[in-house]
Length: 521
Image (cartoon, rainbow, N blue to C red):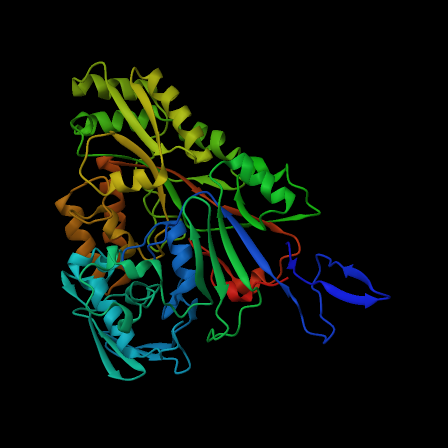
């Protein structure tokens, strides 16, 4: 942690000017007041951009930015683990067809305007607006019918479901609230100029954005959960892993997500290691817009040719921070099953399926984020695995933003890609990745039976029947082999050993910290 102190004491002694410098510790002026500024610098390997909006932002660094500026009603971190922010409670009706949110009455937007139920209703309706492209729309639609959101009074909002959904508490949470008075009338929120000057209710305000360099935030002294303890937060963009690690060791950044290979290189007296679960699934998927991978036999051949153990060892060294993944659901998700085709490494089986498909001299392109050190290593191993099966794999390392843009479109620039996701606990939250036509279905995968089962699972009340439905979905998706799960890995956060309040701030998936205001020095 570096503190920047601009204290110069000027004393007139026998006509001599004496300048008194300052140290890196917190300093006080002659009045006893604190005169230093605390700053927390978090190194990240991607640019979150300056178009901050709660409706369409869905990437890790963009959501970190959203979480810093905005607040949700509550964060759902698993059954029985709910952290309330703008809401003080979320109460289901006896018939489970409605949920009533009671809101805090002491919240102000960064521009001083009061937060009310109008903002909540406006936000959820924008998320439900199909033309807005909201990331959470699919989880707010039950059996093809949207949830109804209505204002009961200034600080009460009611959510009415078209059908009972066991996963509704999670589905309705984790959505950040936007100011109605700022965005009302905007026809295209995703591309609004107002996104560059966001007005939130969160612990920090956007102060400065430098493309490709950094995003700086200043504390919101009126934050409803208490004034943040650190004055300035900076997300410093460092895409090269070696440069980032050096910056951490030199004290130029105070937090950084590191790889298992980096852990042993860090000075334990200066750096603390904080590994935590994100329920993340890293995977390889096929771009089904490509003619080369239309055959299920070809896709299954590739799955058998890949060596999951080798891929994990190359990128994570061992199973200490990473475990093999076989289903699209993480192991901690409700109704996870291991009873799916694991596609254990089998070159003979791969060659047999390729012969059956009638495809010869197969050449494919694999896209991945070029600066991601894990994906770099995974791609290299996959290239060698497929070579052994007679398949040529060309590696296409791309800028992360460019790859995300490509994935959102129908295109044939590559046949396969590496990616990862963090979704939730109830399997219903994963439906947007696999249902036909969903904006998050980057594979362009379509299986009518899977669509039907996802719709049934969302509104099924009986837990045993839900389990049967979601186990069947996992098995069908595995059999179609459009999606090859690789790994469930922990995130390893290395921090300045002087940083305090990490437990209170809460290490959570995607956002890193549940409440940045609790960090201190």
